[in-house]
Length: 230
Image (cartoon, rainbow, N blue to C red; front, side):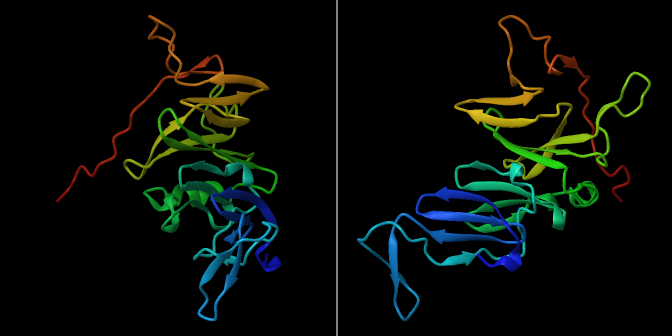
């Protein structure tokens, strides 16, 4: 891989392609089969030992995963990740790379991702229960999402979700995960070394919504519209 695009931060094998995430570029290469190329540039598979990684072909767009491989999440053919160097949240799918941070949240991610330092985290995961991409921006300069007993900032993070069905960022959450992942039909996060199952309702109890890691927070809905449409 071209070292001018920075270090390789993550590798992801998908079918017969290896997706290569560098700091400043995303590329793919053929794996699990050898190939020869004709003069016209067409690849033809040959029956030999599967020992060679094929030609590295970059995806269009000058985007990478910066130094935040923890932001990577995958569902089907969609791969989500954060490029804090370009203040973008991205989706890589069969139609290439798309800046999903531009869906009504360009200013927000420009400001928040610009505040992430090299040691800060952008933890990403796919919530299989709600079918949403979850990203938690965690750093000392991130605007706090919670307040302490005297309204002081008790923590500095923002946890948001992106919904493909509406192509928008639909919710903010009050939990700060150390890791997050889905298994089968359930979504889990880890906090202080403990495993938590989300969206869990005990039988006959509808009063435990809004609880994350044993802490309750009120839920609010904010409507955004133009009161003077004329």
